[in-house]
Length: 583
Ligand code: ARG
Image (cartoon, rainbow, N blue to C red; front, side, top):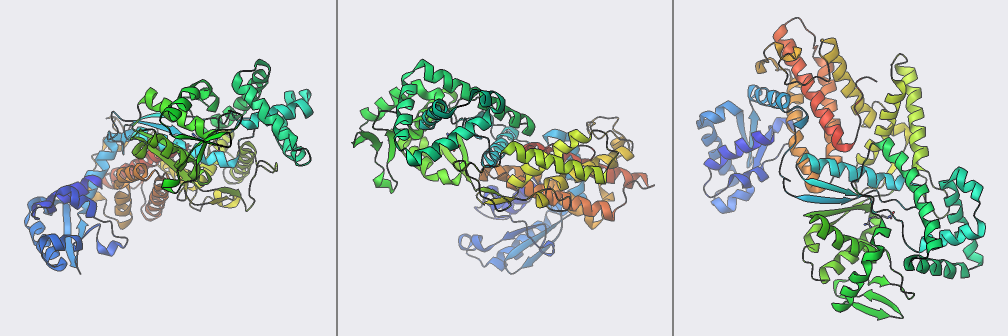
């Protein structure tokens, strides 16, 4: 549709003095109601500049368009309604343009090179060592991964960084807890569970024995000073946790370019703190050091504690400078829960005050809402966390039961159950605007009828099964000459049914939606698009028999199915969803 939009903007701009194509592209709208056209131009904004009334502008544009031969090729009819110019596209143009462009682009349909030469660093997932990976971190992982895939698809060079929470006073706490109450046998057997038990135990004990806090702080100071014994224990905890996290990343199919956690910056913070001092940004406050941000209505950013140890802020400022220098990024995204908004606002400002102007535009917090599990909130301190691994495993089990019931003869049941179970969780996380709090409910996420991952995947599997029945290999490259689909000539004029036209229009929107998802940093634009496409396809599937006698009609419909398969598949890859061919 983007191409069509450009074409129309070009036609319209020719009839408008002093108004560029680009301005028109931005103004063109997709009316919600199909009775108002496929594209609509509200003429109100143009009114002032052209010194004419909106209905007058609309009427003149209509005449101008109708007079152009190219206009007649693209546009079926034009209506003017109270200052709007409503355009109805020619079916033959739509089909003749959309289908061949998807079939020839294949896996690259929707891809662009607008990001060529630009680098985006995406800081995502970033769980905390020695705590189980919980559903909160899943959202960061899934959103971050989608942003990574979307930007790559648009030609950006992406660098995925896992900023592990592996440094800070909490490790002092853990080490102290281990020394008091640690159980070697349990650590060997239960690994991460034992670490969680120790963490919870520390917080219980500290109520009666507040001195424990001091011990923990002192222990972290030792860590920062390089105490070998303490660091050896810390390294063990890190290794245990990483092995645990890796299982989840494997299950989700998510990869990182770097696992440079907070500890990575331990030897890099000194010079940064010195720079802050030299630039007279640090102020002493009862022995601690902070940057005042009152002038910006932001509370101060603490950079050094009284005992000289560093904080989350210190490490983030250092990491940003390091990344700018190492990757010379054009954008750095930080994907976390919105509860951290203040933290990012504070240290982004600090970097800017250090004289790094780029911080203003290039450091971007990508906040998202909380996740709760069927109404239950989740907190690590009290220990009532739902481990992500358990959640995924339970989901997969439930999918196995569903498959057993629906399609007991399916060959690779385990594999499919895994793809669908994980997909349901991923899709659920991406289905609403990221800033919204979401509830995970098994019933909803696993419904094959709702707006879910399984629904979209089922629709994909259906396209594959139609192609198989037609004798085509669903995995085959559509552009290959011996593809049985295109063996017969594709005749655009065959696709006349309203359900077919709906699918064509939906397909045409994909590239634009991918672009919007990147601009808004909002993967839900893609998930919602996929649901709309799946709905349109299902309507078509029910209304239009595909494997008909008439070979021209059959070729045309199969081509359409292939286009849906390609586009769904491309969209799935952008959000990290697997595409089983059968389910
Ligand atoms: N480890 C942090 C947490 O779990 C998230 C880190 C996000 N990234 C960053 N550069 N601060 O809350």
